[in-house]
Amino acid sequence: MIARLRLQPADVGLGMTGQRARDRLIEDLRAAGIADERVLNAIRTVPRHRFVDEALASRAYENNALPIGHGQTISQPYVVAKMTEALLAAAPTRVLEVGTGSGYQAAVLAALGLEVYTVERIGALLRTARKRLRALGLQVRSRHDDGRIGWPEEAPFDAILVTAAAPALVEALLEQLAPGGMLVAPVGPSAGQSLLRVQRQADGSCVQSDLGPVIFVPLLAGLVDR
Image 1: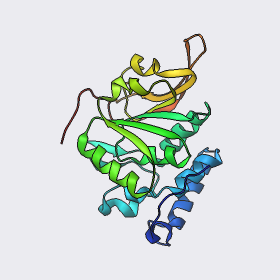
Image 2: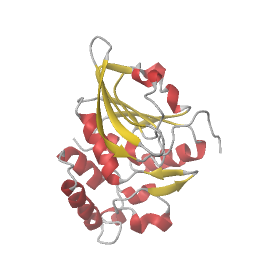
Image 3: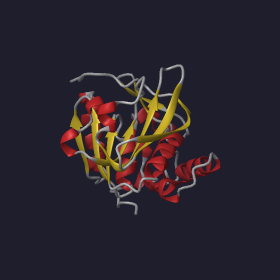
Image 4: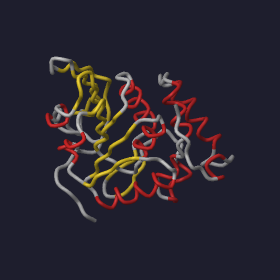
């Protein structure tokens, strides 16, 4: 069920940031293979232009990644949709996102009615994301911390979504998955990353599948307060 968002007139108008632009994006995503109507409806509903700088708002509904400052990007809508679709296969209720960034992926998850926890290492990005999420009336719990350690105090999670690439799967995050839980993460060097879906079995073992090549910023250690 899509959560009720607090929208403004510009979010549903006829211009480059309105509903028609979003509808065109949805058709592109459907043509690219995104089939889960829950995901498509969430992306249609969440105003992506609110998660980028005003100068880039007219490009918000292109199927491209866009810069958000601090060397980070807001992910391509197709990648957001693909990761969200993969995660929903576990029928999650509680989801951990590693790498809040602009807040857009967290907004899509929250719009789906999920209980979302998100961790971001760059303080300035997290502060801005919190404002955006509150403005839309979305309840998301957030934390300024090193995403590689997850959020152990709130574990286990039904699903974990990682929005930056590590050289290998992060063991601390796998340990925070509930039995039957799903982790979706890009893994590998900048020249050759793969999007992996990993499901934790009842005996603690993990089964993984490769969802195809992707390009993400690296998953870095430590905190940035600026």
